[in-house]
Amino acid sequence: MADDIIEQQAETQVAETQVIEPTVEQQIAEQMNFRLNGGEPPAQSAETTETQVAETTTTTEVPEFKFQTFTEKYGWQNPEDAAKEIEELRQLKANPVKEELKFENEKSEKIIRALQAGKYDDLYQVLHEERQLERLTAAEVNKDTANDIIKLSMQIKYKDEGLTEAEIEHKFKKQYGIPKEPIELATESEEEFQDRHNEWKDRVAEIEMEKIIDAKVAKRELEAAKSKIVLPNIESEADEGYLQYKFNLEESAKVAAENIEAYKTFNPKSIETKIDFNDEANKIAFQFQFEPDTESFNKAMEFVTNPESKNPFINQDGTTDRKKVLEALYFGLNKEKILLEAMKQAKNATLKSQLPDNSNSGIGTRFVPQSQEPNELHQWMTAAGVVK
Image (tube, rainbow, N blue to C red; front, side, top):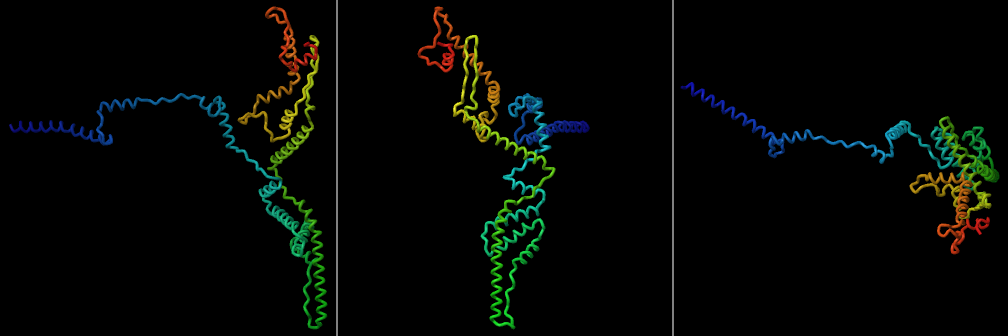
């Protein structure tokens, strides 16, 4: 009996344990879902599973690739154009074009190139001499400026001999040196000393006068030397391309100037058009003549003689009007052919207008209405005897 009660209690405890364990696990799962769901009660497991499955199976549609996008944005007509331009850009990046320096004038160019070549001493010597020349040639010759003018003149005169500043100073003192002022000796009287002192003053005045005269002469020499200042001319193999480029620019400018002068010799009569027209079958013969009017001729002259004039072959967006260029070129090369064809067609149209008009009664002739003024072509035909 006791054994039966113990077995029943054990079975009851096992049953309770089996019932409680799933409940605890379920509570734990619900708490976790509650926490993971941001504090909101989780949805039913079936719905969650369906949503997860739906999300897992949903795919993002990839838009279809269209090359037209690149054509509109970059102007590429096909992949080959894109590959070609990309390759060119890579080549340009790998070998960038060296931008050429632009100089305001030849002097600026020589100074920069001398600095690039490291000719600092040569450049300083030339610029220092140029600065001295500008200062002294602009100064008035007097007691204060005479020394500097003469010394600079000596430097230029003896440049080829390579005299140093010390040697120039020595030569200057030897020629224009002022003797020391005398002092009174104990063995001489006051009158004797005064005589010697007066002689010294006369000699000083004479030297000063000689310096003023020589400085005025030297100043004229400095004026001439100022125009002969030459900056260091730097040439190297690396600059051959630039020198050729510069030469081509100079030649182009020279040719352009010659062309402008040649164009200026023309006038409207110079480009007058004369074409003989002869229709033997209809006994029509005359000479076509056209001389440009002054206004239109001047517009054409402005274009060929003034580089700054507005280009008539440029569109509003700055691109070249190729059709207009081709038309002008074609007309220029085939002017006589075009005008002869125009006169031929005008002649045929005029003759046709003189034929009897049989569209209504079959009788009658087509005439120019009395109210209509005869045009220039009609006048030509009248003169040629085609129209009465």
